[in-house]
Length: 591
Image (cartoon, rainbow, N blue to C red; front, side):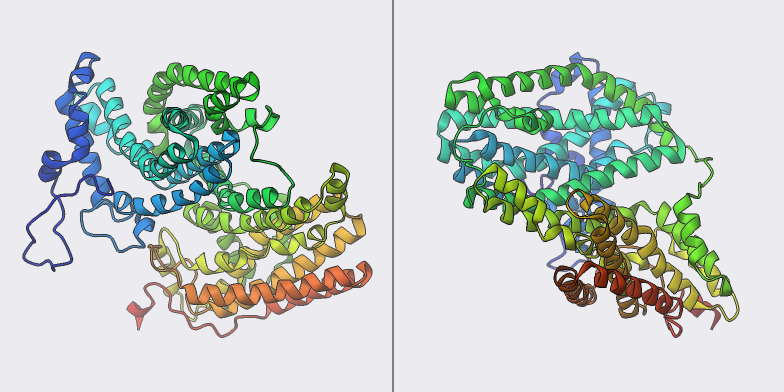
């Protein structure tokens, strides 16, 4: 299962005993277990108008291209992939390992399918959406073969069927890896009838998730085009990854609530509004109905599940057709002008004018704005701070017994005072990933400039991390605490957060100034965990000191300290990194 193309080859002459020879297209077409699986449906596909020989050839070559593409899902095996071997299948053990966590919920809440089974389904759904960003997006939105297939007489039905089969290979593989253990454990903890129903419901959820992803992309492709379309798709992918960060903390949050009596989750639950909003919970309806023999909540959720199945059945075909027809929009070059917002113009005025610093600040801002890979790697790390606020808050809330006590605990919790400091967690990652770029060869331009001032380039790149990423997040989180804290206290906390955030940015910039910004192509396995770990420890120490100051000092003194920290750190940044010694791409060519 972990490698559905697995095949014993003779070693090539230049290979080592630990390095199997890659599959060739002909070998894959002859031996792929997935293609043999699709052969079982040859008669059905032929009857519905699909040219099966063309279908098989297209799917086979798509899988072969996935196997030889070095960038396809390379993060799953940390860059140590074998030539011609699909990295996705080689990395499925990771998802199988993650699924072991779900046994805890099913075993801990056997009398509450909505919580036990619902958590497993919700976790699977978010993992599916995360992998959608990493792998399925590249396949769903691949525009390279559309023109070729159209000129070779391949019908739209055959092309759509091949694209569907290609994606289902990964959808089914992920489902088997993630849901096999939870499904088997449901038979053990809940009995055979519940296990069978959970199996069927899980398969239906898998198909609904697939239709949801197709429909989401189809709608976006229909209403947008050019660069705006690409920005919208990047935004959707980032939101999915950010939400998945929260999912990793869900087991800890639910365990805390159950252990401290905040919720009694080991008994049947009545229907609640959040169940209607989170559609994976709908698929627990049949199990809940079977256990309680009551329409509320099992019957209501079952009706929602049936509605989702019916809607998915009628929506899929037109959505897939619209998606296929609109894929050409992705190849359109964007002509939309780059807009300069008020926030950018304001921050740019604060940058010193000498030595072209504002020019390089603008350059770094635009590069960060346009680099989707940087956003998808850094934004979820920035969001971890918000998740950590919830993680710290839940245990204190769950200790209270009455509803009035809960409201009082929330209102007076110390977490709100230090909330802006949590937003500094992702700064280390944001600084580290400055070195990566999709097109590092563009930096060769600066290597041709005599006596080029590298310090200005690096300083403004570091400044952009704080101004564009950290500062807005600190301010937004701080303003949200107005619901719980007086305005003057909020202002003081925001200033301390900004001051310490800028100080953390400067320190980590100094630790990582040995590499030029935007000068390296990202590959899995390149992350220097030592450098990032040191930066994280320093950031935690600085934030902890700031947290003690916020909690124990009067607000007016905190306000003064925060203002001094912010102004002083900005002054220090303007005079930092004067002796950087990194090498620009192409610089050695001129020595």
